Length: 373
Image (cartoon, rainbow, N blue to C red; front, side, top):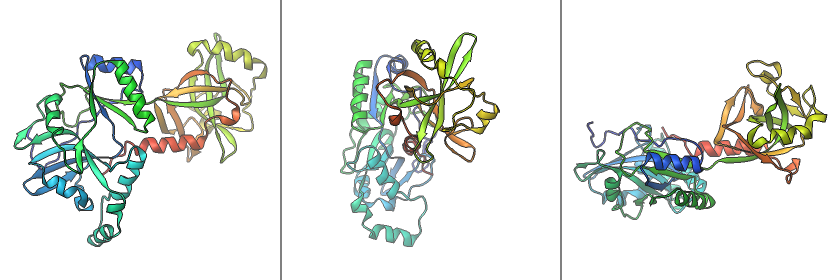
């Protein structure tokens, strides 16, 4: 593979194998031969910086050129680097999580006129919302191509970058799933998005998502109410669950889950069996496709919302044409890989997750993985 400075490389990206937990941790250590580099997943924009002599250019993950003059605070630190290609995240300086992401959103411009640049630099935004670079990989350094070297060797160059506005990503060598789980939980509590676990022996494979780099992110947990039941000759096997929309004053479906998980179907059915309804209650709104049985079957029975259950899921999705949470123009929100966890006897119906919470969580999720063109 030919690599030239000022010709952007298609970035190597981490793969998503599911939410954090023992199953994922075991998979990581199996794929990475017993040890892994755990790296804090920064909440910013991906940026690939190329430098040769006094000339510096940067590119987005879509390989479009960044307007670097909008970030003058980076210039002196970049000028002190040797000829190089480095893979970075541009982040809000001394900011964590979404606070940092909001800084980058306000600072970044894909297109701007010469007059717009002058107004931008005169506005005070540079001093009010400073940025920094976190370097997580080095592909070329001082006339040496490094993409065919293992990450453990490339990391030595990355850790040598100690400029005022440019520093290495936070990374640890981790040897056990307990250590990985404990650190992940600490980071989530500190408002970080999560981790990327990287095989120390991994090469930089441009444009690929190999299992050498694996995302570790938290599960989403919600408290939902039972709206409908799916029953066959063997009994209750699936539940339709929903949120409450404070805007519309109604319950809206978000997901279906396996009711047999942990034998919960045997606990839930006796509670509801004497109150089953053939028609959908007036305060429950379902997607018209489900009501008509178009592509998706409606529940065999409905219930008046009263029972609260906890579910976990990998993430949120938008575009479902079978659920009704946040329903608009035929589309709605839903959960990916929702799993029934337990009955929440301790939680009143008034405290279930709302449609507004789901909408906010979805947009927060999408902001964290935004691609800048």
